[in-house]
Image (cartoon, rainbow, N blue to C red):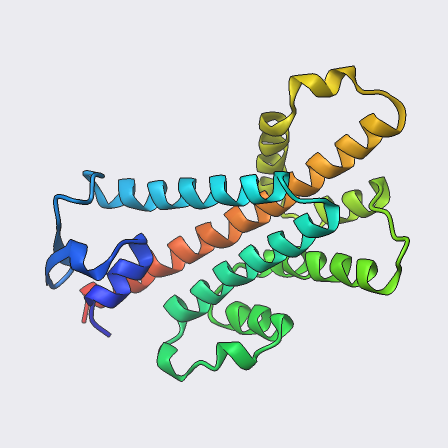
Length: 214
């Protein structure tokens, strides 16, 4: 497989028209693209996606956050499949269940320590679907966080601190408990999304390295 505009534009999150030329692994971008480096473009794309996800989750109710978070994570997982598959045009992603996408991604090289974390939001969604009066509590949150690999748990705590709002200090009782659970849910979903995105980046870079030797 060679590096082409479609592959590069999808990875960087830019339009194909913004890629002036490609020679081997070297490419020239349009002046419209402001970032000066390849890494800068990648980090900018990740930052924008994380900000968009955080905003969507914060503005949703608890069930909405679970559903939106799951959708964003599933989309990023599909990106992993498209970039990692030897023949992505042969993938029938639209007909695959989420669990099938997870299994295929693992077979293609996704970090297997993320398997439990990826399946956790779906299980939580099912609890909402099958129990009308289901309320998210500390037990469910603790179970979610427990699925994260050690380094991801550390990063989760950073997300949690960044999302802790000053006005929450004035809350007490049920209000404080509700806020605590909700903010941990959002931090978990953001962290899991971040983990999948980083895996996509790693797998793409490895693919680019293989291209260099062909």
